[in-house]
Image (cartoon, rainbow, N blue to C red; front, side, top):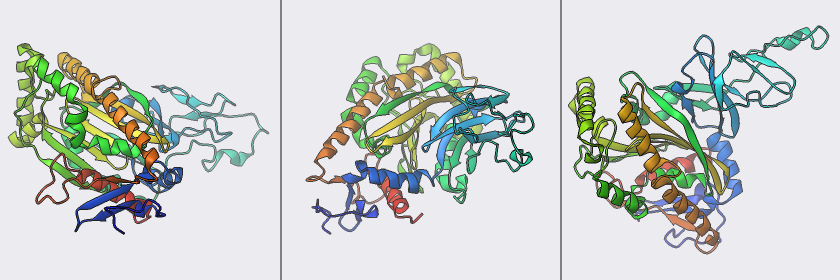
Length: 430
């Protein structure tokens, strides 16, 4: 097959949708992968039913009997902490007739009660109702058949909690592979711990979910799409050209990838910019020196100075940039996704720095900020362009393939890492 001029009429299997010719420095992805509902159904079976999926951060259920409800991988879940402090993830469906047991987004409760017929459950998921004799046989309460159903796998790393619907999946630690180093760079920013700030945001993008995975680690689009933001930073004195330890792109294994670069903006942890005012300079410097004392100069300055955009396959993004955002996105249809995003910060952070963090988060990363509407328009514009796929059927993701040495941030190797994993999983090879 001549992938430089693909045959638009060629029938494709799922692995054939990603074609790589390293000798000729060509990488193509069929646009059908972004538009076909049959592809999405295969993704649900081969990817979302088998990969580790981010559920939430432990700080969201800090206290005993705290809970949040969340949709993950096409399932409605209860993420909670029981009276003994153990963390659980239950399918939010009553064993009786299937109604969602917990309808609130979050809260604190000693028990859960289904509103439909009144079945009740302890916070460890055990059936807690007792009906008069004759309603149910004595075996009804045994064997766990009346309990809430737990997800097959629930594991955490640095208080980031993940679920997996494949009981036989590899451990979370093995799955995260090299991503653990970069999660550590985020988790170590809080001397005590990190915490989710506020309740998060949720919005819809009318585009395929994989477009946001690509976009989240695509430095190539930064200046063309977000030029207004960089002009704004320049005008208010928040754009810095100096930096430390810009590393480029790193493949982290299992489809995960990160780009790391010198921060052109201020970071509450711990990179001061003039627009923050001289009164905050000493405070930021004190945090900076604390990082150096805790981790040594090289790692301390790496945490303070450099920014990171990371995708953990398939759909977790951690952007440790001018603020920290944790973002997931799940497909509702081949051309529609729901995005959830949360700000993450150091617990007991100085009040003024917390204000800066949240301002930075909303200013650039929020759904009404500089970046997200730009990106949404770009992704939806791609999705509209895929209406032409019968005649123009392939995306090009070849940038940087001839390069000798490590990839640059604005190469596309990080997207190729994602697509190679996608191809393997869709073929059932993982």
